[in-house]
Image (cartoon, rainbow, N blue to C red; front, top):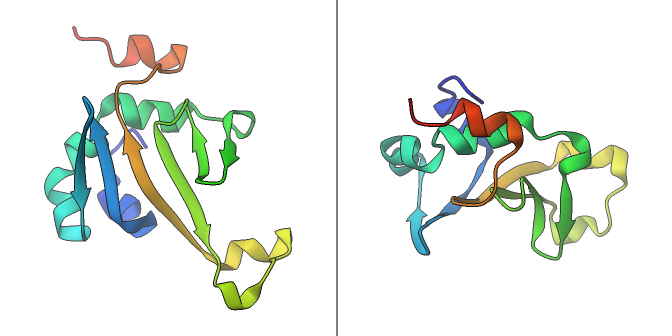
Length: 117
């Protein structure tokens, strides 16, 4: 996610999206707002953390799933009428990013990639 992927990112978001920076929440209600604030929501450190996250870095709890100690949170949206979906069937349900958090520790690969020059 290093290059500009505004359209791709917007299609993966479950609105409203919450973006937390310095303890303050910004609520992004739709794609237009995300495009206007894209560079602050998906800043270079956030994109780097997502890029370097591997399968072993993913963990979850009752809120959903995350990587890089909470930099981004997502969940699959599975209708209640489906009940418990089988793992193989999960891919047909919508993926939804619902929170982007800034200021946490980054993977070592990102420390040098995003350091001020």
